[in-house]
Every structure is written in C-alpha cells, then in structure tokens.
Image (cartoon, rainbow, N blue to C red; front, side, top):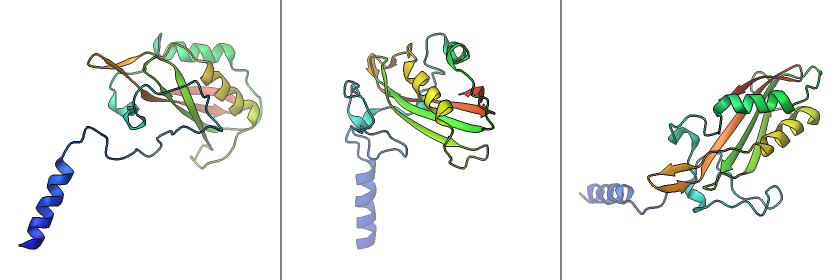
Length: 164
C-alpha cells in the first residue's frame, strides 16, 4: 500500500502545471558572452523559446523560402574546392523579429562532424546573420521567441540546396 501511495504522489506531482517548462530541450542555445552579441535579448524567459517543430507556421520569413534562396544565390560566392556535406545554422528569432545566438554544425555527406574550409562556412555563417525579414510569431496576442534553422547542402564548394 505504501508503494502505491508514493507512486500516486509522484504521478500527481508530474501532472501539476507550474507555468514553467520542466526541462530544457537538447540543442537549446544559452547565451555565451564569448560568441553572442550583448544587444540581442530574448523577450521572455530563456525556457520560453519555442521550438521550430511546435510552430506549424512554415518558413517565418518575408518572401518565404524563395527569398532566402534568392539572397544566397545573389550573395554567396562559390569556393570551387572538393568539399561536400552539410552546414546547419541554428539561431533564435526574438519577439521583435531580430535574430541572434547563431550556432553552426558542419558535417560530411554521411553526417559525420567535420569542419569546412572557412571560405565556405564563414561566408554562410556571415550571410545567415545578415538575413533580415524574420517574421514575428504570435501565441494568441503575444509575440514570442522561437528557434529557427537553415541547413545548406554543399557540393564541391557550392550551395546546391537550402532546407527546410
């Protein structure tokens, strides 16, 4: 009987809502003073940044994905070297439509982590930071912060695809 009461008590605690998220997601981007600009702030508490898979809104960018592709087509200068794989850049868009806290992950075509030549990855990172036009996401009437990502498929130093 005692085990049953303990189990019932634990279940009731788990079911209680405190208004706070009970955990952080893998990949959450916390502020790093060595990497992040001090003028970029999330509008709500750190744990309140929405995950991209919770939004169901599609690409939250003025002009949608085609505008992003057009921006990179115009501004990325191909580096004709034998490097192929994936570059993922994940970041936060705050409730004002500003982006910050950029993090990059580089991998080969088999998703094994590896660095790209900085002429490729540095350029993609810089251009991603320059994108302006992120839409504000609303939850009911309140503007919220959210995660966004872009994945670049690289083939021989050229961008051949941008996801999502």
